[in-house]
Length: 154
Image 1 (tube, rainbow, N blue to C red):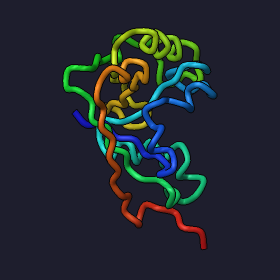
Image 2 (image 1 turned 90 degrees about the horizontal axis):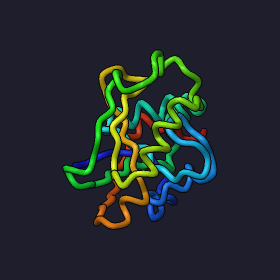
Image 3 (image 1 turned 30 degrees about the vertical axis):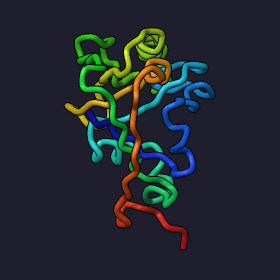
C-alpha cells in the first residue's frame, strides 16, 4: 500500500524517523512522540501541504518532492468520525483530545492509523509509527511536483 507525504528532498533519508514529532506537537501527537504524517493520495498530500505552508509562499517551495512510502497492506487501523471527540475538526490544531489519540497509537505496535482529514471531508490522512516501522521493510521513493504548483523565488 502506498501513502504520500510532501517533504523536502534533504529530509528524505530520515523521513521514516518522525523527527518533527520529537521536537514539536501537532494535531495528532504531543512533543517527544516521533510520527510521520502522510496522506492516502498524492492530491490530498499536496492540498494538506498547501494549507500548511504553501499559502505563505504562493505555492509549494521547489525544495519539496512527493515521497511515496510503501507499507504492508495489512498494517493499518482506521478511525472514523464516530471514534473521535465531538466537533474534533473544530478543535484547535494542537488540541489535547486528538493528541491523546495519536499518542496512544504511537505507544502501540500498529504501523499506520487512518484519521479523517480536516481539510478535505471524506478523505484520510495516515499517521505512521516510526517505532513499528523499524521491524518491517518500508520503501520510500520520490516523485516530482508539477512546476505549476511550486513557488520559485523571483
